[in-house]
Amino acid sequence: MRTRISGATCVLPSGQARVDLLIENGKILGIDPPQTASADEVIRADDLMLIPGVVDDQVHFRDPGLTHKEDLRTATRACAKGGVTSFLEMPNTKPATITQAKLEEKLALASEKCLVNYGFYIGATPHNLDELKRATRTPGIKIFIGSSTGDLLVDNQDALERIFAETTLPICSHCEDEATVRANSLRLGGGTTYEDHSRIRDEAAAVIATRRALDLAIRHRHRFHVLHVSTAAETELLRAPQGLITAEVCPHHLFFNIDDYERLGSLVQMNPSIKTSADNEGLWKALKDGRIQVIATDHAPHTLEEKQQPYPQSPSGLPAVENSLALMLDSVNAGICSLESVVHWMCDAPARVWDLVGKGRIAEGYDADLVLVDLHKKQTVRNENQQTKCGWSPWNGVTLQGWAVRTFVNGQTVFHEGQFDETVRGQEIQFDHARGGYWAEKPSGLETSASHS
Ligand code: DOR
Image (tube, rainbow, N blue to C red):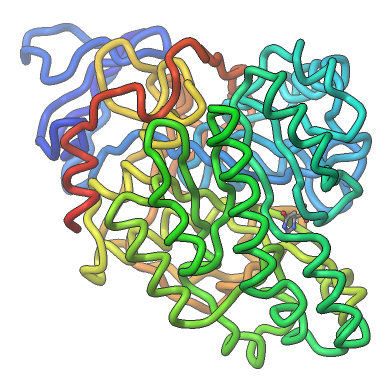
């Protein structure tokens, strides 16, 4: 079946253009084809923007083992609604994804349940170096250099040295220094208020761990992605040599700060913690000047009941996959950044960081993972409308302008104007690590616009 998407303004690697697209067999067959080119179906998309599907490179979907919070079906419905067509999931499920066998079990589960494309990291422990060396069918290795939800932690220097020295897959890390967090916690008697979370997981904890991880990556010349940078101070460290290091920021660290605890309490309790308004500013600056390349959500659902426990029993994490694109499109409408930049940060850059085959841009031969976006549409985030199983959002009640109205996964419509086609199945994402990651490709026009928006 050949489909023509007609009338939309497309965000192409070269910039915006009002061109038709032909898609066939799940791929982009042609851009700006002649009007005479035959098609079995024409989708009119006048007044809409067409962008590549979002690639979210940091999510926690809780399946297997924690499916009272979320599962791969509910999470990927949320993705489809939010314009996320590919996700890379973290290993802190139950059991944790720390062997090739567990990774392949997750891939099998995903092939049955996922409405969008999927990939899974392998998690590091102090004792699974051989598994990490042999791992395949994965974007890379996740190290919790500081502990978070679950019990994955590699804090020991010798173990870290060996992982960076002896493995070849790209590595990403949760960077919060365990010793600093423990000392802060002791000083504050474990903490009693949600605000204490940001005093315990403070700026120093983030900076010390990020510095330590960058030192390992640079000494071992190992490709390394800093997950969820949360402080302006860390962005200063990201002036490190390009070619090796990439970094990511999450919407909650861009949009929330410690003043929001009063209103939202544990709903904004995250690891790394939210910081100050000056950090919000510093993170935006680093994103715009290219020191941070990627926006991802760290979607980490917990039930409201779990979240409503007093600190420190309240778990850290918030859901975001269905609102992240809208939050960024709202920022486009507010004149804060350009649509091209958003596409770079959320689609092309993460696809390049992790060597995804056929993802992240609208180009011939690429997969037809596409999102029709209505930049004029205003919609209020409501807990009762959330697709995530946990059923709440920290943005509840916030009206955002700019929403995905139709999401295509490998050419198939999975979400359209509030309706889902649950028969659609995503595919296992392919990784070609020989490509060498984000910096291996010459900067595109999009990066230039990213650095000036
Ligand atoms: O707040 C967080 N929650 N940060 C993480 O890195 C993990 C996540 C979770 O899995 O709940």
